Every structure is written in C-alpha cells, then in structure tokens.
Image 1: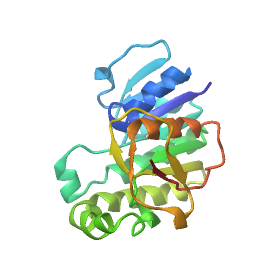
Image 2 (image 1 turned 60 degrees about the horizontal axis):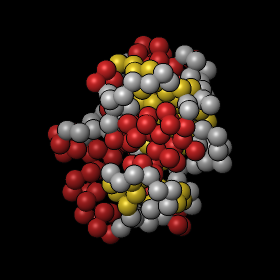
Image 3 (image 1 turned 90 degrees about the horizontal axis):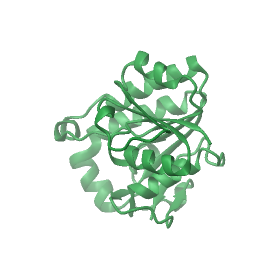
Length: 213
C-alpha cells in the first residue's frame, strides 16, 4: 500500500480518487483549500487544508508521500471564459516541492484537447467547443503539461475525454498512441480507477494517454 497525496481532492476526479484509494487500503492525504469540508472520516484519510499554489503548503503535505496525484480543476465560469493560471502556477510549485522532498512519482490529470491531443478528438470539439469556449483555459493546461514533461520526475499525464458522474465500471481504454486518439465519454470513477492503477503499473511513465470509455 502507498501513501498518496491527492492535490485537488475535494471534488470531481480528486474526490473519486480519494474514495477509491481508501477502499483500496492506501493512506490518503487529501489536499484542498476546502479539505475540512470533505465528507467521510477514515483512519487512513488525512485531510489537509492548503493552497496548491503555495510551495510551503505543498511541501508540508509531501513529506513521507510515495506518489502525487494532481487533479486540479476550476468551477468558475469566469476562469473558463477568461482563463486562469491555476494549473501552471500550482504545477510549477508542486514540481519544485517534489524535487526538494525527493518524491518522484507524479500522476497528473489535464484533459482531452490538451497538448498534442488537440485536433484528435472530434470535429465538434476541435473546431467549435475548443476555440469558442476552452482555449483560454487549456492554454494554461498546456503550460502545466510542459512543466511536468521537463521536470525529470516519473510522470504520467492523463487526458480523460468528456466526463460523467457514473460509477467506475472498468470498461475504459488508455490510449497512449496518437493514431488511436478519438473522442467519447468516460466516468470520473473510471478515471480514478486508472489513476490508482498507475501507482503500481509503471508502463505509462512518460506517456500522455487519452482515457476513453
């Protein structure tokens, strides 16, 4: 079993990963500004309130961790419409803190359409949704991905397609090869399942799989 620091743990994929990790028997450090308000109290769950953009906060949470799962997201329409620096700033501070503390394994979630997956999803996404609504937000995700790729850490960047709230069913595919990339849907539960599998499975280190199904 591992000690996992989950950054962005209070909702969405992060919260699903916390739940799945507890069930799997891992020791979980759930890091979020609203960590104290998270549901559930378990012996293996340590809720840590902090700012992902603060290197001091992150370093405190990192000591003794075996792996970091970064699942940051935004809920503000303003951030979607006008952009944010959350992803790049938090990732830069996280990478620096990981190097200082000696934690090497980083599993990060961005999204389908980030980095070189852009143009390989669906025409609706690539030519309408992305340029009309998402390009400012994803511009910062691109910067975050570049920081991770240049970090020298043992990284995996996971790019899920359109997300649903259905429970995990295991019926998904991780597609690291660009020629296989396509759009679709998957559940946050499936993403959480894949993230946890990467703790032991080292085959995706240095890869940017699209997660579909």
